[in-house]
Image (tube, rainbow, N blue to C red; front, top):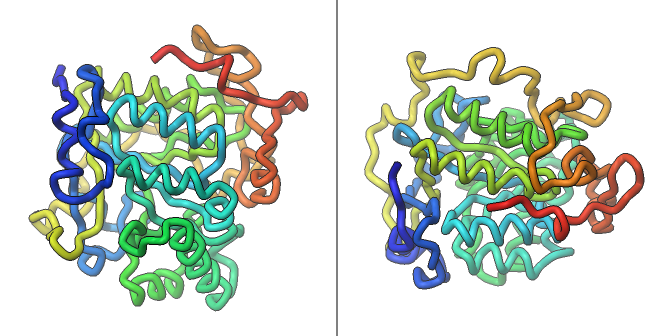
Amino acid sequence: MRRITAISCALAFVVGVSPAIAGECANPNALGTSRTLVIDSGAHPRLGAMQYSETLPLGPHEVVLTFDDGPLPPYTTRILDILKSECVKATYFLVGSMAQHAPELVRRIHQEGHTIGTHSLRHPLPFDRMPLAQAEQEIDGGITAVGAVLSDPAALAPFFRFPGLGRTSAAENYLASRSLVTWSVDIVADDWFRQITANEIARRAIQRIEARGQGMLLLHDIHPATALALPTILKELKARGYRIVHVVPSGLGRPATVTDPQQWVMRSGRARPTAEATSPSVSPRQAMPSQAPRAKAPIGRGQSAQAETATPACNSFGLIAAVLAFGCQNSTGHQLSLTPNRPAS
């Protein structure tokens, strides 16, 4: 097993990625961030094996963590705490209206060295059925909202992910015209499904990563079950010899990482998820509340039945108004909290 010490967390600082200092990474047993991948947004406008022919040029056993839909306390807060304790850097795709309601979390994400992209202004669904003019307003509005919170244009990466992965050629072309990289995804853990458990999220994430051997993982930092699952995911990645890669855009004084063009291309011989590993996965756009299946994984030690089995009523895309109320409730109407149900690290 490869042990990555706190020194590895200095990589992002050395290349000028993060305002956070390496000394903050004090856990000698942390999973860590093994390297920083700098990409040219003009050279690779669309990434992600689920929808595109190109994806990030990762090596064997390399994983990129991404989080959509936030920020939302207390779940984004808990996830940031977990990432910091493990010296792991991730890429966040923030919703503009959510950023406006939790600006302190947006600034914390930046200060702790994570990459920040955008995910529209209000996360409307279905995104791929709206007129182009409306899609442009959502794209631009999200960038403006998050950028205003950060007060630093350089702090916002030119990365965008469609809400529900609802792409259109016209919207993709608009993003490319603005030199924005469209991110899809390689691997999902279905953490937006209603009533999916933390155990099941972790199981699906690890099983699908193992099936591919590498890739970018999609998670959502607005769900309590995701926050509960994350320590297990990171622990399993470390135990199985996986390494975390932090992705940042190229810029002045930060040239793109040298890669071979073939490293970006999906190869037919690359490992694919098995039928069991992918079932019953569907895209975030398809997994609306009425379609989301129940998971049947056992409750893990140290997690209560309530926190483990109940996903919040606002645990579906498009219900931004409910999320902004900061009051996600389970199916029995009880308020969910991470405080008494934190899993063992």
